[in-house]
Length: 457
Image (cartoon, rainbow, N blue to C red; front, side, top):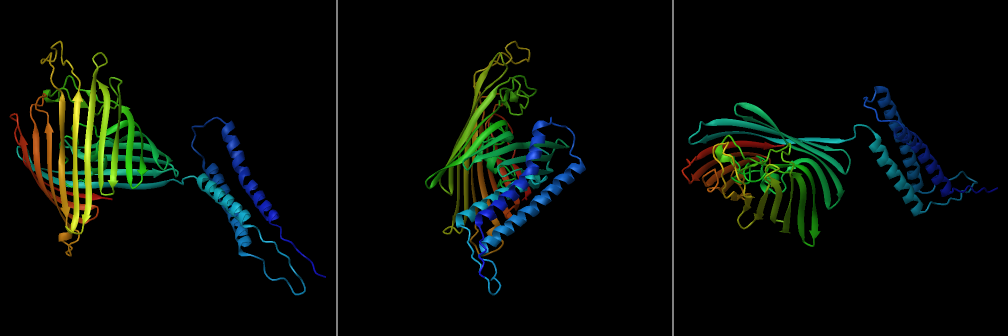
């Protein structure tokens, strides 16, 4: 007698759904308990952790069993039947198999996210040590360490923090450079909140790290000068593809800088206080940056920030602008890597009457509070030379300038810097540079010899 034993795909899939339902029962109960119970400030107990871990392991085992069942279906008909018997098989359709496989992948992702401590963490940063001998000052050694902490909480949620530790005024200072949470909305937009590097300042955001910056010191105006180094607020940023070109964009809102109206040092009168973390005055700054990339080697950018500054009863407008040009080319003709960068910034503060009652001893005083400055830098490294020493040597020239003669500072300054770098590794460099300083308005020139070792990791 011949018996037919049909294998019905629907029964197999139904058993898979039953397994899925049993897998989700603990999570449904847990979600209901969380929704109905008030939030607790207590820490998770060891018993609760062990229970969650056990449930996670049980889910993994059931998931593996379900995956094995799918694998068996995909292999084809079962083993040959015993002699004298005939088995009629009905193979599952490809659509049914794909649907079940998709359900398993979804469940696998959910199981992964339920396990505690699943976030990914990375420690990065850089360290430096240097020596500076500047005319008119005592020579000194210095060192600094910047630790960058990166957390990936989910595929879309990230956190970045940076701490800077350095010697300053015979003490070790700690500065919070970055503390920002970011959420990836889509491939073209990311939202960030917290403390972040100033998007309008290309050098600060992309080049200020000591193992990236090609000279031992920073250029005038663009660093610790006319633009804030960081902002405290929220930003939206992303990249928009436009055929073979790209457009980078950033828009932000943040605490406004303060206006220094009664300084201890008269030369600081009318400058902006970028460390206005408490937002004294209650003003808000709005700004952004766009960068156009017509070819991969070139980017042209422009940034602007506008805000009200000053005390509430005498508010004026501050406008900060920046334009940048960046070109990098690996040239077989010149047998090396060419790196050309330039940036210029402008600072405008509206008319303000300083010390109108004369209580500070210099008022009433008004002046043209416009300042500008920037730098041009060219570097060349012969990477195509067949010599292991020469190919790691890089020559650098920089011209930087700061114009503020008609402000209480009282002088303009320009510098010419020649540098020679040796790259031990792609992220470790030894720098030697000599700087020619030129100040007008009666200020003393300060030429400098500088060396620095910088390591990024």
